[in-house]
Length: 375
Image (cartoon, rainbow, N blue to C red; front, top):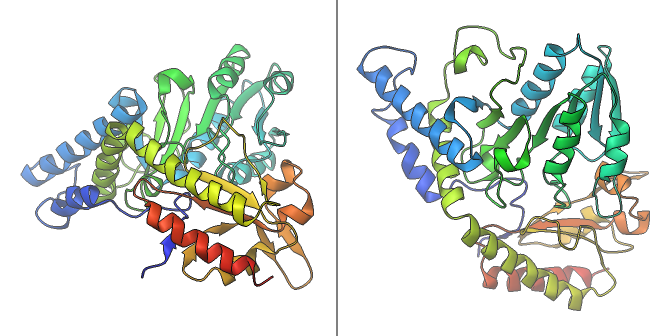
């Protein structure tokens, strides 16, 4: 049997429908979208269709979508672009201590270039306190970034409330929605964010493609300089295969959102129910209600996660701590949540997909139970 895959927050396979959508790009649909001849026009039509499909998922205008190489580039584009475009208004920027490295490392980059960064704490469920958030804002705050849902523990942040507060002080608000797109609604009008990042490989599209939503009127400094691609904001010949795949994946995600979310949650809850019997002393590290439907972050006390994962042969999942020869390094997210070291060191993230079956969950539980017995 193939190993049971429960690491969908890390990446997803390309869905069959997406693979079929990109098939023409491997043959006759090969033109440069910037060319004016027949082949170029056909490629341009494919890019335009994909842009409309992404906007269908995000509830925005196609003109507000810029294609990128993935979530990391989208975050870099949004944060550097907004910070540098608004530096004459202020140098104060705000984020949280639990962001993805593609946000945290950009903030450190900006700090080295004269910006003053604030990294907000979270509670034990990984939630940002809106009151603490408001107090961190001040005149001269030009940029705020808070992820829609945490990639490790799945907690969903109150983005609409935070965006409203950020706008009240004149700041541009960005959210990294790489983990939420395709799992919960990600609607630009509802979230209120000025900038939204998504990544193709998190929602059954190819790797190496993503998108950045830029609310009309939001000013960014150019990220890629060259010719006038992507409305002059992101130079470089378009990744036609990736863009067509992302568009197809976004349309499929929006049309199947409720059904897929219910399937992921059913598989996740089945896994959680079984783990409570197998390991009653384990600790769950996520908000009980405000969380992704597919994510289960759980700590097994007194066990090193890397060792547990190595003994779970036939099961793919992710660890929340890394063991070195003389130390254990826990994730910055668990550290910010103040998860006790004895638990944090044994943290594993399981994440289900839209096609995860009950049989796979039951097989995973047997593998986990066998591994735990070896300690």
